[in-house]
Length: 420
Ligand SMILES: Cc1cc2nc3c(=O)[nH]c(=O)nc-3n(C[C@H](O)[C@H](O)[C@H](O)COP(=O)(O)OP(=O)(O)OC[C@H]3O[C@@H](n4cnc5c(N)ncnc54)[C@H](O)[C@@H]3O)c2cc1C
Ligand code: SF4
Ligand code: SF4
Image (tube, rainbow, N blue to C red; front, side, top):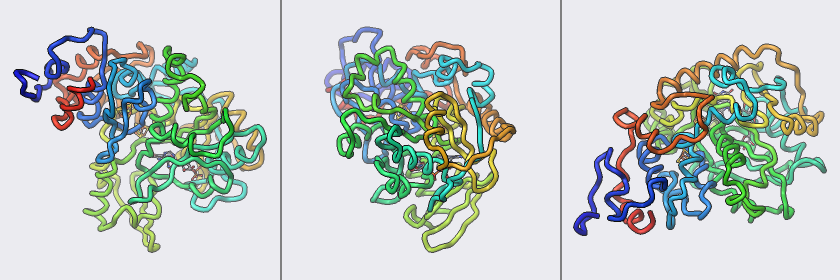
């Protein structure tokens, strides 16, 4: 504030200047830096990692746009910045830290112990493809040494957006089969889901998410601040198995509603099922109708930050499940870790699977996706670089580009004055 009057800073100003006359220590990174560089810059992919990372629970999700927002005092600890795959987290470094070959990370599909085309032995109503995710989770929820719960997604009551939900029985997880193409923000609600769920004291959970969500979980698990942030009570400690859904883009809530209404005269509630098929989208409506849509029509609904994502195949997960690479009606299951392998073994006959020798289609998808990301991102893409990208280096790379930080939202100035 200058002379008692708030002012909106120009991009490129020191973002701390307008809110305080006292310069905080130079090594502090505040939520407002994340806000300007990612959220206001429309690069947020709604993974929720920043919310889960904050040791003082200072970040929540705004109801208006389902983006992170400050809800109480920020201490400038930088954990949100360090956990964000569009800011301080060099997400492509994570698989290499776990032993993946940097070349495979850059243009391939990372570490894969085995790959199969799989489907649910008993069939799953409403499954997106082979029902492999649901069948696997149902079997693990049933097995004595499986999992106590699975964090999956369902449609929110209000108007068809994705919301996280905890399933603790095979029947429940079957209820939530199918894909939602918006983000459920499960890392924001994790603590509540654990509190509300019928779970033992020290539960083992499986978590399903898009690759960026799993990157967040992996980064937090590996964080040097883990001890400080994640004592036994922290919900991330409960995650015992991560399942990434293959993903090249997710939709923004408002953008999706806008395209559906404008192009197809549909509300989100009218959509029974979406699927990405080649270069198109198949929309099935609740009244039994079908629409074939062009992916181009939905370009305006894609989360802009997804264009900077080179992790279509979820390289940091225990298991990745998608459809590309398998025959129609089956799911492609990539086993990446010992935890993933153990889960598949425990699921036993719940999956009918045949080995996939040809990884070509999945590799092509990954290569295309990585090329798109390298073109879109202003920073260098470097699987061998430092895992953390500091704020100054981010500004050097992104300032004066079309992905430059945007001066913080004037509507939030009062929050920053009080809390940052
Ligand atoms: C945004 C998005 C984009 C995708 N794009 C591709 C693609 O380009 N190519 C490809 O091969 N596959 C893609 N997939 C994955 C694909 O749609 C299926 O989810 C996958 O093949 C698993 O099918 P299944 O029949 O085995 O799963 P199912 O048995 O139907 O189970 C799916 C599970 O995932 C949970 N779930 C659904 N949506 C979400 C979500 N948004 N976040 C977290 N959990 C969720 C469900 O609750 C359920 O438990 C995408 C998925 C998402 C979410
Ligand atoms: S991309 Fe993820 S970590 Fe970054 S601001 Fe958005 S929700 Fe937070
Ligand atoms: S494309 Fe990448 S950033 Fe976007 S939702 Fe999928 S995994 Fe997340």
